[in-house]
Image (cartoon, rainbow, N blue to C red):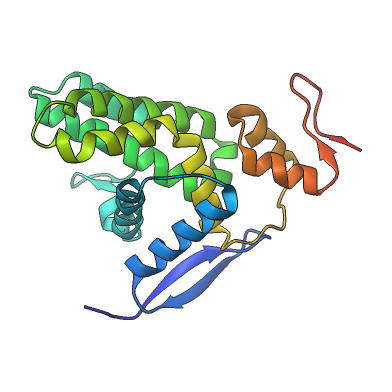
Length: 217
């Protein structure tokens, strides 16, 4: 059913803006398609649909956050990985791996700047998420479910950082105005983000591998 919703977006100064949308899934589908085109990232339609469904689901906090009756929040990825390693069945392990990949993709895509002050940054989320999707793809290949999802997870594993760039673009509503320069440089240095590199270059800054920091022309 079509219905009106609101979506919180972030402008170039990091301020949240509430954007009314008629249908959240359609909004995300259009936004992801447009952002992928701007970023020059080719994503298969079924993978795009998976990402759109993920964004729609996790736009509601009750789906994103864990709650066990005592704690409410995001379980650290390392603990999720331990859950996957200790899972008593292949199905349970697959569920844990999917959760790792999904959470890592959503957080690094929409809350990348909030990771700057944490013990682990976006490169850790990209590493954990990509590996989780890769392992999940391997486990599902050859199974009934794998016929539909194995290739989706394989592509997400291979292009995890690129999809993060796409989601960063969606978060910013296509706004190409660069934000904090030092943060852009850190993201580029740690992840090789083409989007961060392009934004730095638009400021006349050449990112230097192994250098002391961003250098202006």
